Image 1 (tube, helix red, strand yellow):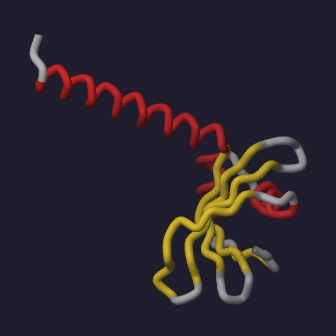
Image 2 (tube, helix red, strand yellow; image 1 turned 30 degrees about the vertical axis):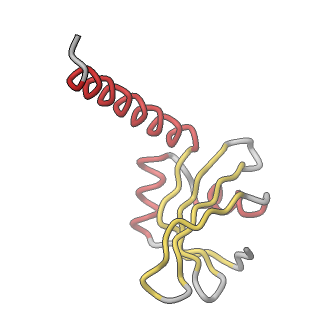
Length: 111
């Protein structure tokens, strides 16, 4: 995948900087360092699908960037966050799922 430019909306820029502590330059930087791309969902507009890029900045920070890949080969960035935050979310979800499984198991097989 070749990204020839970036599209930024000011409300997205404000959100990722305030909430996730990621700058636009950091988010763009991972695209210069061979990130891993993953198509998440077909877009509402033909040929403009939602992707996730996982990569490392020049300073060593690991980020995940969610973007729409436009027909113009530009990335319209939807969100960006530290990859460590994603791992925390996944761990928290897995812990909740495991607790729910144990409760269901105990209900189905009482003592």
